[in-house]
Image: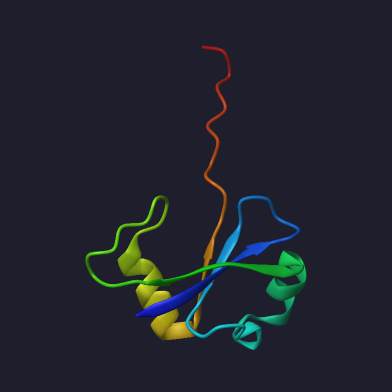
Length: 83
């Protein structure tokens, strides 16, 4: 499965994977507004053997097939209370 990855201009470390290049209409309008301008980062083949640094490729493929997009949010930061 080929996909296209874009970086959000408003949300640091937030990426959008699209099933079709520049298919921004597949994103709900409120989400498009929250992400701001999306800048193209890369095109990749997302086959069963493909590994991704921060996402489960099977989940990304399922989201692309089901809704046409997948959102990669920044990693959660664990905050210690000093104990």
